[in-house]
Amino acid sequence: MAAKIGQFTGLKENTNKSNSHIDYELIDYGNGRKLERFGDIALDRPEILAYGKPALTKAQWISISKGVFIEKMKTKGSWTLSEEVPDSWVFVYSFSGLSWRINLSLSPFKHIGVFPEQEENWKFLMQNVKKGDRVLNLFGYTGAATLCAAIAGGDVFHVDSSKSIVKKASENAKLSGIEGIHWVVEDALAFAQREVKRGNRYRFIIMDPPIYGRGKRGEHWKLEDLLPTLVETAAKLLSKNGVLILNTYSQKVQLNDMTDIAKRQKLKIRKKGWLSVSGKNRQLNLSRFIICASA
Image (tube, rainbow, N blue to C red; front, side):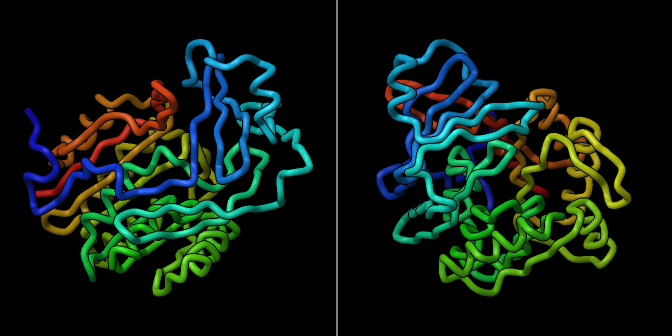
């Protein structure tokens, strides 16, 4: 049986949900869609993992939702909105008396700037990152994990290839009153490989890579092909007893694939499973994850 997180290198595993607050609610899901509330805004979006039938009627979904996303090509599409939906609004998260805020807005790719199922990772970072720990957030997106690690006292490097996304992440840090984060606009793998050559090391590395993307020379890649290289590079960057948090939404990468890749790099699996959101008596699994450690 694998050791629990709390049994190695002083890491803690949260079991108390009462000391956290997330400005989010999973209202219902089914038939390949999910109905969620972010602050005061309820949104109806596609979700490939939303199996089964909704608990609410179609009429109830229509009356509750203030925005509906319709896919037109793969994940790209458009929103149908009520007048109540602003151009942006604030999402708040707090844990053990510490809190941060980020701005949400609607994108043509159905995302809005936050993934609430990541709360398990947020808690882990806020509990385990110590003052001065070097933290690398690859594919950092709008910065939720970055803010968690920074609030905990980490020396955080936030890396994303999109200049506009990094700008949003830095604005979220300002909104939360957080300073001192290193913002890096660069291809995540290219930056990590250069950090290996520089001899830099990190206590924590967070990787939430997209399903597909473009490399530093514009070449297309798929996560199932690139993941071994990403994990190999991350393993070289971990300090002694360093921790890698890896998750993916790709349906072509299974938990066994993730654990096998990590084990080939001599990383010890400490926890694995699904990142989920819960509604009334229902749970929706959305992202596979592993937490592993170097020797």
